[in-house]
Figure 1 (tube, rainbow, N blue to C red):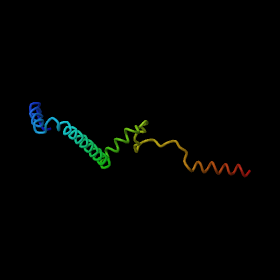
Figure 2 (cartoon, helix red, strand yellow):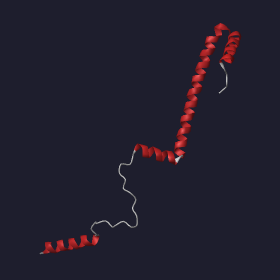
Figure 3 (cartoon, one colour):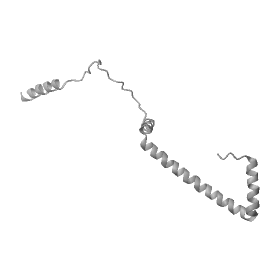
Figure 4 (cartoon, rainbow, N blue to C red):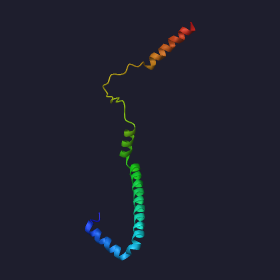
Length: 107
């Protein structure tokens, strides 16, 4: 990211040691580490919020999440206009059967 090599890091460390002194260096490094940890946590929280927003906006992500959590187990196929009609009884035949049943009950 900053394109700093080992030689530059060594020179930077020596300069900081000379400027800060050996007594102040450990406390400064601790403060720098805490600051870096807070920045890392803040950036992770920000990234998580952006991911949540992008999931809410992107319908493809919702579709993918739903299909992964509930895989289709049965392929029913797609009907066409030329499929044969099903062999289910029609409502008229049910009415005829109930009328004959009523006639039997009256007798």
